[in-house]
Amino acid sequence: MMKFLEYLFVKYHYFQVRVGNGFIAPMMAMLFMLFVIIIYLNAIFFMAILFIPPKKYDMSFFPEIGMSIFFCIGIALYFIFLYKNKHKFILKKKELQNKSSRMAILFTVLSFFLLLFFMTLKILQNNGKL
Image (cartoon, rainbow, N blue to C red; front, top):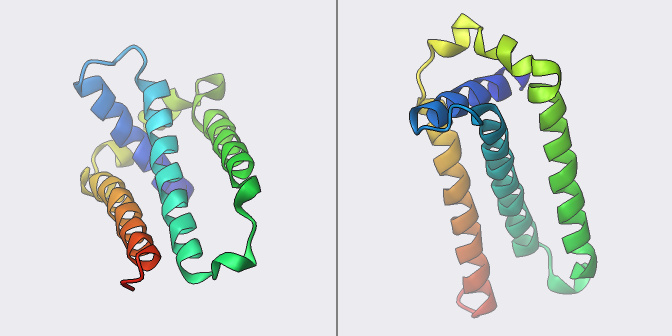
């Protein structure tokens, strides 16, 4: 799992450098990773509320839980990649630089696809068509 996160960080970092954000590329790569992980968590949330009957859970505390998860993952990614310039050592790894970017692109596109798929299923369920 850690190798995959490092791979994503390297690929997102080089993407940021290519689009012209070289000065803030490490921070933007970490934030992009956080964004994609949060999209996956939202897709899991929609999948969970799709299969659990609505009377079984109270949704009033979900925003607080969502924000705390967001900040915890953000802090964890900061300490994994940016604290004490760890990103410089990760970017020097040759085995991560030479890999294709297909997995990073697929990981990102799949997150959006899953979120939209489960949101659509939930909309259909709410309209009584599912």
